[in-house]
Amino acid sequence: SGGAGGGMGALLLDEPVAGLDPAHGERLMAELAAWARAGWAVGVVLHDVAMAGRWADRAVLLDGGRVAAAGEAGEVLTEARLSAVYGVGFERHVSPATGRAALLPAWDAGGA
Image (tube, rainbow, N blue to C red):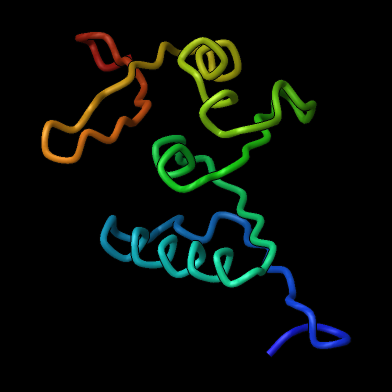
């Protein structure tokens, strides 16, 4: 079903994977991606940078409530930008099994 006039609709979700285990988070994001492929507008707020990098086509990075960057997810979610906004270093990790990259905090040996 669609919105008014038979068109597609929009889904807006705030932290939909918070509290979910990784398998259920991936399943939910895959379902949202299917809605997007079907023509729906899907907007998702995430603090999970790795999840955002994996699933987002476009991203808006906020810093103190202001837009720090917006555009294609790969251009917005960079180590330098994330480090500047969050105040911790980020590193790109590439899965040897899939070749997919994820940006993760670069914690020092002490955990901080």
